[in-house]
Length: 414
Image (tube, rainbow, N blue to C red; front, top):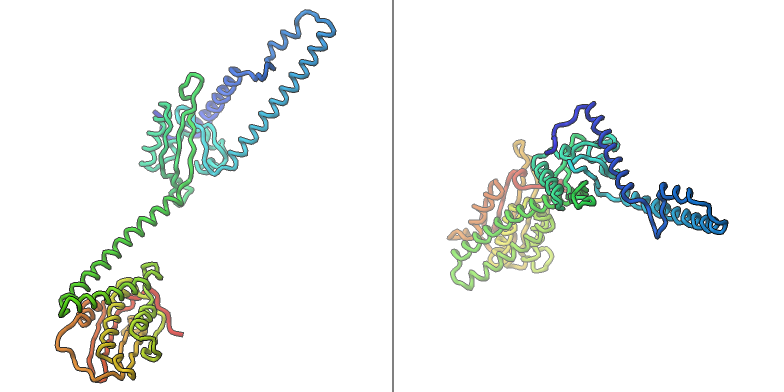
């Protein structure tokens, strides 16, 4: 098994030197086993000397031999030029890739790497990291387990792929890597080296984490919306005198919720513009006639739950005003206004709906859906106070709530 303790400074220098010498010996062994030879042209020094020491040959033979030697030299130079070009091409590939490419000995120590990999492993040059056990780089427990398992797989001659997180003292954030570990076999078919190719997938991991959070948030909001729909349906059926009336009222209320969701979509489901909610109610109940609504107030952005609740309340108020109140007469209109005020050292949102010019109003004899919505849902969602009054000249709704409970962004009116 690999030693996971860090070397002392002196022992580290000796070990690195020994590793480099062993690697050079390994490369010399490969070269000795494969003398360069192409199309019968060899450059073996011993054989060349034996040819030159042979018996004297005729002048013609020597001339032919010189020409052949010249041809062999030219061919050998061409082969060497091709090798140099291939080496330069491979060097450029390694220099241009953003992947970390490292070569480990069979014990899992770093013996070669491209330039990109050096700072990742905490070094300023290759000399600072050569000979370091690869496992020492991976400090997080889950990553160490994955790396150790992958090294065992590579020593057994199997290629494996896994993901691991890397965190060093020089990095403020955790980096995620997608890693392929593959054995490099010798002539006997047994692994002699291990190739590790690591690709930075930190951005992908962060995107996945954000998507997970958004999915959880979306699921939470959908559950809240369905709970509101259930409450609306229950109250509608309870107060309706017939199925036809219930169906018409429920359809209208769900439509109002749908329009409120459109406003929420503009705020990425995290906020709703108060003026946008009011404008939607005006469009639904104003019949396109100018002057039916007088709207005033600063730019205010509500949270999603207060926004949905206020949208339903505006729909109920608008429906009642159209059927029985100020909007049932041509000369009637509705004044809607809101403001952010400081009351007793606390910022509060004040909202007012006032019907003007309609028929004489009498208080209702029974509590309907709109009244329940205002008394329960509005107070619960806004955490403030709400009062629905029925003076003879028109219905008035006044509401106050702490701005911190309902307002996401508030700006004073120009």
